[in-house]
Length: 387
Image 1: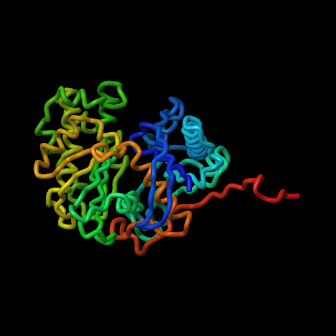
Image 2: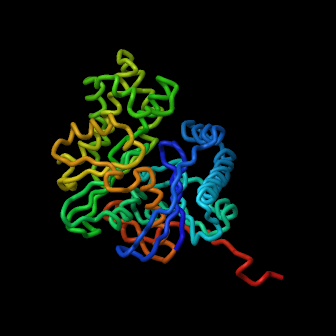
Image 3: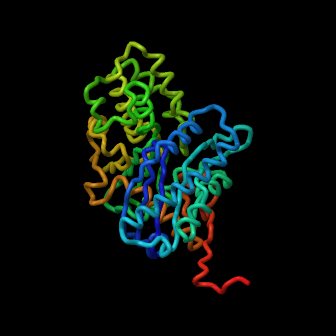
């Protein structure tokens, strides 16, 4: 089968599109990456999206319009990657689209747990003329789960190693980790969000330097970690929260970052960037260093996501976890950038064949579930014409 995976994360650094060959199901799944690219958001789309994410009040018209706009942008991104690689989107068996998370809160306030991803699947299907699988989180939430993280199932399929316990750490806007014990059992898998990944760094770079991110960790490498701010950050209650747990922009977004800057005006911009970069690494180290009883001792940490390309962040990880082998996906011959888009191809393949792909021991769901909603595409060239 030929399929595409689309991932747009909380860091808003672009639309990841992976085109793969995929065969088999469950643990016998085999996937091969054929093409990958990250398509940057157009400035106006990024402005619309940022406005919706950072404003306290957004109109229904804005949300409805943005849902369609993102669907069109996602579909166009797939078409672009197909064209770059002499592929026809009509030949895709399906597209699996995570969508752009606008809001995610499964804390059960007022007995309502909810998650909302935008990117209208019908728009993607109409542009690419193939079926689309989308909206992967709500079924897990409906079954009492956190709806996150979802990638662990794919990681279990691809990375299980009976000789060592491995942690697969994605550093996108939010950091999330999957721990694969040597036992190999899906029920033994542990996964959760470690806290902010690039999100606070990016927000601080925007506020302090009018730049979208810290390229190559350059600003962080010029600063010094400030103990007072570091201690304040490490006292955040999210670190001590029990598993399962997940977080997002609601907790570590623009408002959180601005409050930190306002609370520590004596800290220079370079030192601030260094400290919040250290904090992203420290959150990971905290969760993997025996503070959480359910987390087993890790032998190897495999880093992916945009944070894998921040040398200063990787340096902090190695300093904080000297007994753990810290490597990047590239060290294993894989792509740090493509990992999550490939994961949604695997999840989409499970859904396409009516197979479950959540991990209840991770999300807290009451049972395994088939995730996502399928938007079919009617290929008139292969069907009888309607009269």
